[in-house]
Length: 169
Image (tube, rainbow, N blue to C red):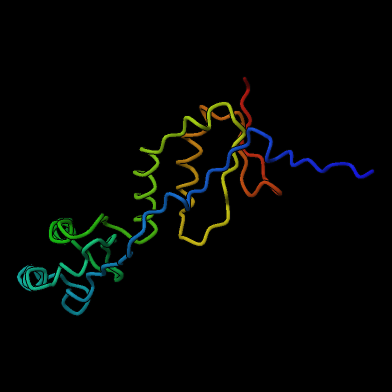
């Protein structure tokens, strides 16, 4: 007589949170202003403003844009702001920084609106493997939201988790 195999994971209160499931779809664009600098080191205001004015900003429609400068040049804040002002009407989001900062900002904003009530008093696994570029900071934002409500928090997959937090309740 064979003993029935019981899936204890499926029968538990264990919940999995996958940051990839809330990943906002859309093209990511790194906008480097170095090409608009004189010899890639000096910002000439008149030339820079002309470049901004004549640029086709509509190409960033529904994109997520990270505005940066990849060369060692002193760029005044207004230059980044001018680009953001032109790109914002088209883009889903514009940040001043690199693509990792862009993802960080997106996740910080998204996690402010995620309803986590279903995770209250439950053991939670934060899924670790992802196909999409999830920044480490997104995991920290999620921990900050889950820790006050979850019974415990683990990282990984149901078959192999790393314990991170256990409530003292």
